Image (cartoon, rainbow, N blue to C red; front, side, top):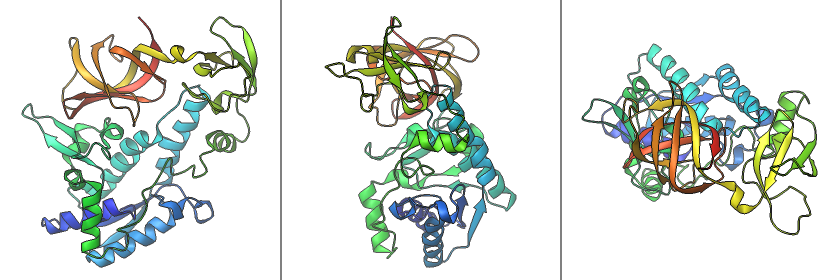
Length: 355
């Protein structure tokens, strides 16, 4: 229970369905003095605990706070920092889902006798005719959260419930209002919970105590120096704002080169690519890829998805070939494959290229 409306209504729905429900809030990051983002609807700090505790009391269910700070630091914070230092742009929510919200929480919950964990995600878990579990898109594309859940394991899915996926956000708020939950109008959490001021570079500098990549050169693809950048942790693929380059027209980040501490600048068309390589593969609706398969792929949370061919290129990697070039394919982000409305699998983008 995050203290928000979605997880609160999820608890209510499951209780109505006859489950014995225990409310749990994960204490994973903020200490009291760090909770600057909590009033805006944060998901894992002190106001979340207070709101969740009130909801649990209202629903007359037991409630606990479980401390996962060590796991969160190791599997999310350290991962996030390491990826940025390597010139990649990670999605920490995906790592948090797999290794903290599921692996750590599920293990601890089963130790106290729980059969399932349940969340307020807008997604649906189904068991297919082939015997595999997968995550199916929610009834509303606007709130669909399947992208961030692609790397859950079959064992984790078999012990997970997601009752909110059958409803729209408006319906969830209506249910909360009907049963007089005070969180019925609480704002949704935004951005990365542990960086409420959105200053990623500043956060990374504090985490590594100032040992961040120094200033370096903006360069063209062929190595011509265009100016100086503030350090590679300040940039991501496709970025236009904040470059402070007087080029007379918009230019974009097309590549980050940590080995030479260079940020490559190009034109709008240079940001598009029709191929990518991904690794750290996980499969859901299908057990694996043994031949070329046509799927739909999303390369970021807000991406609408694009038709593509996916093929294996070794034991640990796959190649994705899009029908049309896609903007800002970004190393470190997830590429998630869909078979209709079901998550087929996904991986982490390793590199991008053009035919």
